[in-house]
Image (cartoon, rainbow, N blue to C red; front, side, top):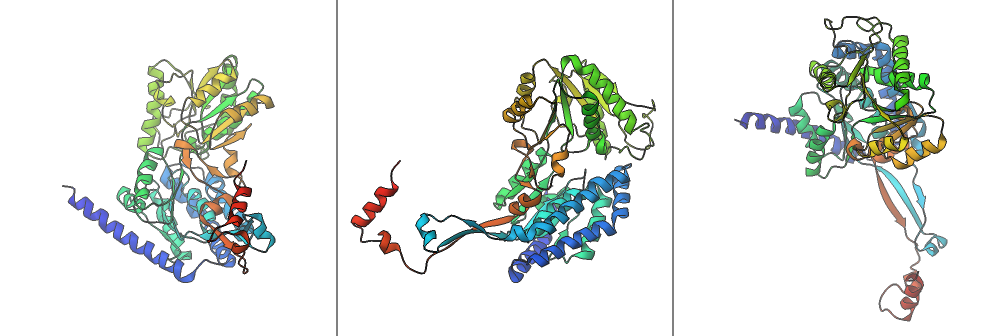
Length: 485
């Protein structure tokens, strides 16, 4: 019964392998591209985003059912152009060999040299997700292309209109030997992950990442995994509640919370929860006076995700949590053209509720309480290490304690998500939140082979150091100087 499916998989793999082999052959034939060539590649990417910005916004709006075109401009277009320009401005500097010290040091005195050369890996596979399908294709490409690689891209089947648009865009600006976009469903995705890339980047769910990493391991392909998890917020007692709530809810409602770095739950002082709820309501009301037909408020991407998020709320309600639905205009969202879910607070959830077990990826925010901040730290440390962590407050000693005692992919202090926008900081996870990192120079290095190169002296000093047989008193004197505390 499985024969037809297996045949299709093998056929898909064979066609993809042909593209990969053509890219690898072109890389070997043409060698490492110059800085000028890499800049030209990056310029082509920037041009695609500028020239097709309206089409991108329309495609994402169609895929989501309702997605803010202005938010798309911010998060998918401008946020992609920034990394590409940053790479353009800096790649010549990044490409320079890095001098290192010689061992023993005397070799350096005589003119020997040690250095690290940054060499393109070859062909990098990029698997991008549905939540920011354009940004999470182009942002990794900034590092991939700056490092001199070619790329094969597999965008998400959950945003098919956007994926087809990107395929057409890249085909206009790049040959298939430079960048190839592969569209299709899970079968194509399975074939894609089984290819012997020189590096593979995956952005998506931890559950899927396990399959991706398993497939990559068959070919010993190094991977960069950008995943997610439950990114916590700690509200310190000294936090400005209006500012903190406003920034937290801005992060939670951006793209309707469908962000890997969205604040997933809040840990607040027990005596300040009412204040947080009031300020959260006020903040949402200022940004979204209405929800149902408001073009600024994004819908959930698919019915199954809508049902999953609503299921978390229903489960929490059934198990005794207090549910606070923030619906500023009191609209009836039970009958609507799109899959919009109002920002929803879940107060005092217990750990047996599904909303505290799974990454939410939607506009639902659990709020737990603590008496001492150490309780909040212990709660975070009792769970998987998160992709992001957010702390609000003014007590620098408490801030330093939280940062020292917790481990996360990244941290934003007194806001949420913003560390991902810093091109000079690495973006990546730790543990179940991912491995490896990119952005800026860190992305260049992630997608480069760091080749160790040693330039030996013309003069043979081995006899002087007595390093070759026949051994005698000379080497014993040398070893006595080396083997000591």
